[in-house]
Image 1 (cartoon, rainbow, N blue to C red):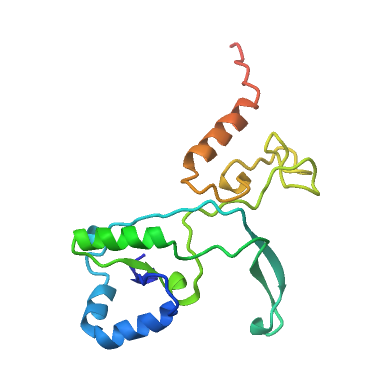
Image 2 (cartoon, rainbow, N blue to C red):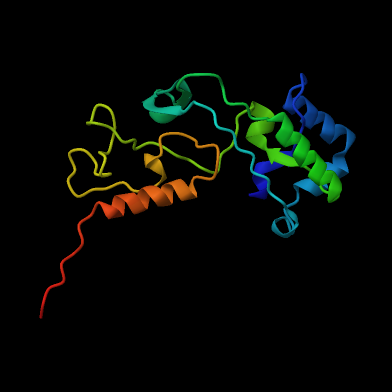
Length: 188
C-alpha cells in the first residue's frame, strides 16, 4: 500500500503535481526517505475521510482508441458535481496530526496528480429494483431470471454512504437471511 502514497499537498490554486515536483527539487532527501516502504506499516497512521456525495460512477464496456479499437471496461461520472479529491478540513487534520507526531502527511498519487479521490469502499453494481429494467436483484436479493442466485454483499448498496458500510451490509445480509425459510429437521 505504501507505493500508492505520496506527499499530501493542501488544496490551493497550484496543481498538486506542480507542488510534487517542487517538493522533489527542494527536498530530495526527504522525498526519497518518505518514499521507501521500509517499516511503513508499523510507522503509519491512516486517516479515512469520507463524504456523502449524491453521485456515482457508471461503467460501460466499449471500444477505446488507446486500446487500438479493442473494448475495455470504462467508468464515467453519472451525474452531479465531481467528487473532490481534497477536503480542506481533512487536509488540515492530517497536517495537524502529522505535526503532533512528527510525521509526514501523505495521500494517494491519484489524488495528487489527477484530482481523483480514492475509496476503500467500492459499493453498488447489483442494485435492487422492481424488475430487470430497474435493477439486478429483487426485494429478496434474488437475481432476476436466475432463480436460486442471490447477491448479498456491498454491491446491493446503491451509493457511497459517507461512513464505513460494514454495518449496513451486515444489516442487509441479516434481513436477506431472515427471508429464507428455515430447514425442517428430518426425523430419523
